[in-house]
Image (cartoon, rainbow, N blue to C red; front, side, top):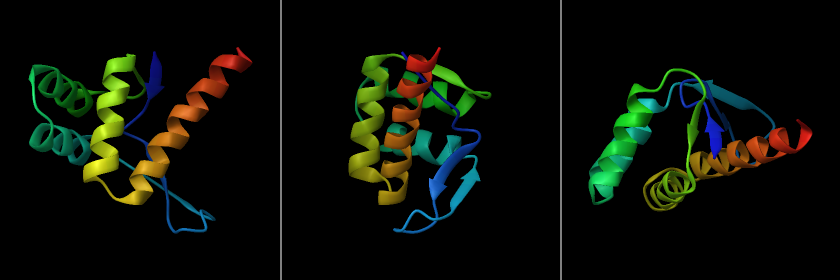
Length: 96
C-alpha cells in the first residue's frame, strides 16, 4: 500500500528540480485515467482519486495503473512527481 495526497501534490517547476509547485491534481489525473485506461478498475481508481480528501492509501494494482497513466498520458514533471511521492512513501514507511 502506498499513500499519496493528490489534493496537495508537489511537482518540479523545471528540469533542474530547484523549485516545487504544489497544487490539486485530483481532477486532471483522474480524467487522464478515466479517458485513457480501460476497465472497471480504471473507472473505480479515477473516482477514488477524484473524490479523495488528503492522503489516501492505494494498493499495488492501483499504483501500477497510476504509473501507466502517468507515463503515457501526463507531462514528464507529473511522472517524476509521482515517482518521488511513491519513493517518499517507501522512505516514510522505513522510518516508522
